[in-house]
Amino acid sequence: MYMTLVKELLESVLRFYRRLLVKKNPEFDNIVNTLDDEGIYVEPGFLTPEQCQLYIDKIESHIASGECNIWVDDEGADNRIYFINSIDENFDEYYKNEKIRSVLRNYTGTSDPKGMLLAAKIVYKEGNVGSGGGWHRDSPVTHQFKTVCYLNDVDETNGPFQYIRGSHRKSDVIRSYLSKVFNAGQYRFRDTEVESYITSNNRHIDSITGNAGTLVYADTKGLHRGKPLEAGTRYVLFCYFWHDSIPAQFESLMQVK
Image 1 (cartoon, one colour):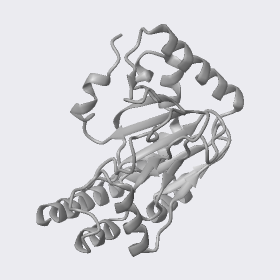
Image 2 (tube, one colour; image 1 turned 90 degrees about the vertical axis):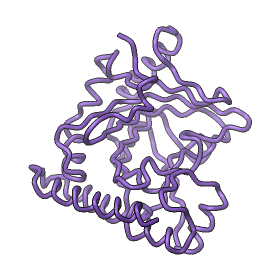
Image 3 (cartoon, rainbow, N blue to C red; image 1 turned 180 degrees about the vertical axis):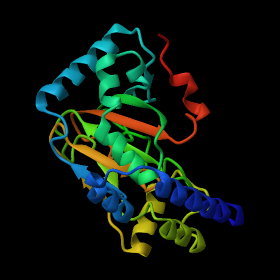
Image 4 (cartoon, rainbow, N blue to C red; image 1 turned 180 degrees about the horizontal axis):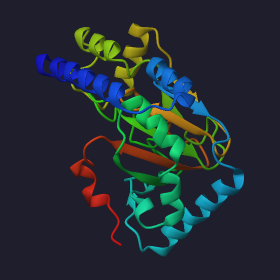
């Protein structure tokens, strides 16, 4: 646990100085302040219905072509095209969206991120575990900025993004280690562990439902998952960003041009 606490402290110092030195856009202070406090901010209507349909049609076209690198889960429910921005100009334009980049800079202090766009289609299958494979943190130490954009309407039945507000805060993470609710450095969690965490910290699960075009800004150091689907289909665009480099585990998911 000692080394994990040291890493948390060092990450806090680095992030503080990055945010201090980077040129910020005050227009997005409200989004960043909400991320600091809650770990999540929801913006309806980020994309138009026409833009959403265009992206859905393109996702279906790429899947049908069989010409790109597609990751599929064991249940055959979750279909993911990582790095789709590297093979499709329309998706690359979205990935480089200046508003998303400005919020990223303000929140993380990262002005030249490494990253990629993931286009995902998840369908209902018996026994599906939802997008992301259950409750997790994208990083047990580093604050991780991600955006999630719904391309079709999402309600409680077709896999809404779920988040536990406040679970991204370092004080909250360290307290959960000291109280032994979670193990130091743990980033995958059973439902029973999450239930214990919610009870001991007076938290609740927030299901983010919304119409097509809804954008979620999230610090995915916080506890989150895609809720297992009860019916239907969900199309989503995920923007991933890192400060230094893309983690090695994503290399096999890159697209071959």
